[in-house]
Structures are given as C-alpha cells and as structure tokens.
Image (cartoon, rainbow, N blue to C red; front, top):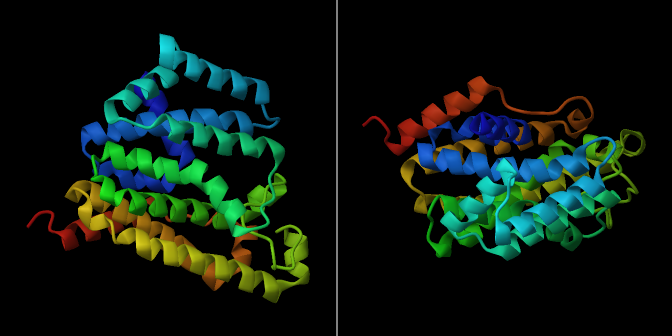
Amino acid sequence: MIKDFRLEIFRKGNQTFFDSSFLFSKEVHEDVDTLYAFVRATDSYVDSVPQQPEKFNKFIEKYRLGIRKGSDDPIISAFIELSKKRKFEEKWTEAFFDSVKLNLSSPIMQTIDDSLKYIYGSAEVIGLYLARILDLDEKTFNHAKIFARAMQYANIIRDVHEDNSSGRVYLPLEGSGFSTLGKGEAGIKPLAFNNFLRNEINRFNNWQKEAEKGFKFMPLRSRIAVKTASDMYKWTMKKIHKDPFIVFEKKVMPSKTRIYATALLNALKMGIGK
C-alpha cells in the first residue's frame, strides 16, 4: 500500500521522468519512488488551493523530529531511512525546504541569480540525491546538478502560463520588458515574448549539453533512463521553441509511446540486446 502511494505521488509529480524511469534497477526504482514521494508530499502543501502553510511547517517539524526520534509518517520515515542508506547531506534537504517555502510568497524572479537560487533547492539538490542513489562518483555531481537544473528550467518554461496564473514567475524578467509573463502582456508584444522564451530555451540547451557529458559515468540501465528523459525534455523545448505561444494553449508533453520508443532506441544504440 505504501509503495503504491509512493508510486502515485511520483507519477503525478513528474510524468516524463516517471515514464522514463522504468529501466532503473528494482532497488534504484524503489529509492527514486521514495525520494519523489517525499518531494511531492512537501510540495503539495504549497501547490494546493488554498495553500496550507501551517501544514507545510508542521510537516517540516515532523521531519526534523523524525531524524532524532523516528517518525510514524510513512513518507517521512521512508525518506529518513533512504537518507541514511544513501548518505544524503542534510543541507540538501534544508535547501529544498527553503525553495518550497519561497512558493508561499508567490515569487517573481528578476535576475538569473534569483532563478538559480530557487532552482538549486528545488532541483539541483534532487540531482545530488539521484547521484547518490545511482552510486555515482562525486566527480559527476556537478553534471547531476546541471542536469536537474536543465530539467527544472524546461518545466518552468513549459509551465510559464500556469505559474503566472498562480502569481509565480520563475524566469528572470530583468531586461525583458515584461512585468509578468501573462498571455495578455505577451499578446501585446508577441515578437518580444517569442524572443524572450527562445532565449531561455537556448539557456536550457546550453545546460543540457554540459549535463550530458556526465552520462558516460552512469551504469548502463540508468544511463538509458536518464538519456531518455533528457531526449524528451529536448523534444518538449524544441516544440515550444518553434511556437512559444503554445505554452498558453496546452501543457506540451511527449506521449508514452514516444517515451518508450525513444527508450528502446537508446537501448539499442547503447548495446542492450547485443
């Protein structure tokens, strides 16, 4: 029952990564499920309508107490056990809490430094967790951080309309000429909006290229899963780059058929079955 609950939370939190992760080994998959269940459970209090700051703070208190005395919350206790098993650093989790807490105030980022500070806690530390779960050498940790940064930036670009509707702007507005990234303002300055979003997609592409240099250090099955997720995010960004205003029409995501076909192709290219 608890395992099924973790899987459902993971699936709802990141469908593309969930569908790409089926190639992980059983142990790795279970650890990733536990990680994402904790992440999504924490996020749920600030993503709900209305937000639940009291429950969010109580959840964090339960986690901190659980580190010292144990917890009867299955999501928290499973994550604490995973943290010990995989040697997560506590400062990563605190940075994650800080970024989630920021969403209680409907942030509007002005500079890329503002965006990156948020992304460190909301995504890069997740990359570090995953690096430990995959038992990667610490020399690959920077690649893991950049990969997670790129994935998060792709999500931010894809969800710009949804976030703006919630009063949140995660892309840096400084120098853009926009006060928000709403459809109305974008419609008044369509060329400027197209250029702005395409420039941010180029930023994603640069990070993604750097991150992919670290794929070679991963075990084969994990490399296929992560490469597939990477390919799907690049596909998503390519679609939005072609028509930036599509973000106001729908949530651009690859189909399961595309994901599985890409995973099979990557497996063949990397030697599975030879």
